[in-house]
Image 1 (spheres, rainbow, N blue to C red):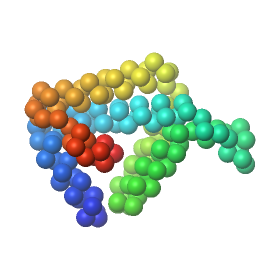
Image 2: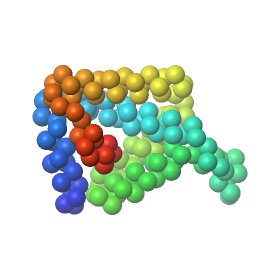
Image 3: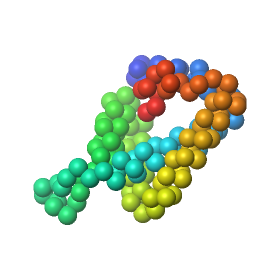
Image 4: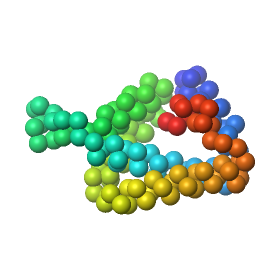
Length: 133
């Protein structure tokens, strides 16, 4: 694992010490990420020229950018997360819009509860936006 990723994990653990908050994050972070990808996928940017029936979306661009960022940090983690990103994107295609929104609201609500009730401090991304990834 590259040093930059290790540093991010060290910083992350400083804000996530309580076992309940850690468990909440294991549930909430994928929910929030799914919500972001699915909603960004609603924004059509255009058509891919050689696949005229296939729309290019902001969600696809987001997945590619996140995959490249994680692959640059650590290949094994990047491959694993890239596969999960593609799976989440595909799941978003078959999930009703109201459910995508409900999943996001619930994910954010329990994540905030984890920080406010158990950690008793604001999430780290409030001071370091890269931690949101």
